[in-house]
Every structure is written in structure tokens, then in C-alpha cells.
Image (tube, rainbow, N blue to C red):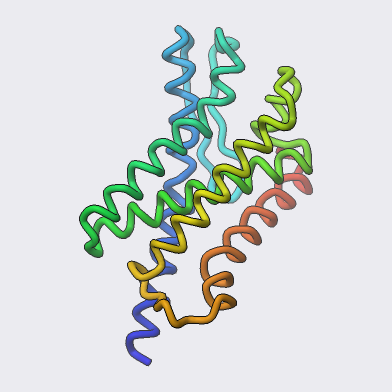
Length: 193
């Protein structure tokens, strides 16, 4: 029982850390894309429970590149973090590996919910003329690759190979999906999309 409590506490801490940290990675990607194209960023609004966004003194020079920057940068950083966790396999780097898994799953779900509810980056990309299939392809890549890596990552967070699939799904998939869904609904109801 003591080990189960430790596992639950550790996994909950990893999820909370990831939930609060990931918006910085995603918005950092938008900021980097803006700066690389000669634009300026005057501030951030980071809200893990709502929409996070950048504040620009003027429209970014390449709005399309800036819009894609969030998912591209956070996907590459997530893969880098996962690689470090697999390479060193100790409790300290498991935290950033968990953040990487969270980032991939979050990006995929964010793009799918954004397409369904016409919110966030997917909505902007569609208005900029990006074909919906390319947005869905990015979402599917992120979700499928994140799920696959999560499967191999499970022993690092205390899930045994003999554990039932239902337990794995509930711990690693359902929680991410429900969290993203409720955040989207929350923002739609408040009109902050």
C-alpha cells in the first residue's frame, strides 16, 4: 500500500508539474518563431487553466510561422526531454520525461479540440489558409507518438508490464483527454477563446 501511495503521489506531482510548465514551452515556441522572423514580443499571459498567449506590440511579420511555432518547438523539446529520461533513467530526469510525454499528448489533443471547437492555434491556422488535413496530421503524429512513447515510459513511473490495459489507459490517456476537454469547455463558456 505504501508503494502504491508513493506511485500515485509521484505521478500526480509529475502531472501537476507538466500541467503548469508546458504552457511556457508552447508559448516560448511562438515567441521564438516571432523573434526569428524579426518580430517582437512584449509579454506573455500564461494560464494553465485557460488560454495562454503572447502579447505583441504589432502583428508578427510571419504569422503563419509564428502560429506553427508553438507546436513545433514544444514537440521538439518534448522529444528531447523524453530522450534524456530514457538515457539516464533516474527519478530526477523522469520528471522532465513525463513533461515530454505530456507535451506530445497535449499538443495532439489541443489541435484536435481546437479543430472541433474552432479555438486556439488550429483556428488561426485554418483562417490563414492551412489545410485541415495538415493540422490533423500534426495532431495525430503528436498523439500517436506520445502514446507509443508513454507505453515504453510506463515502467519509469511505476506501471508494471503485467498491469491491465485499462489501468494504463486511465492513468496515462483518459486524464490528459478529460483535462484538455474541460479546459476547452471552460474557456468557451467564459468566452475567452
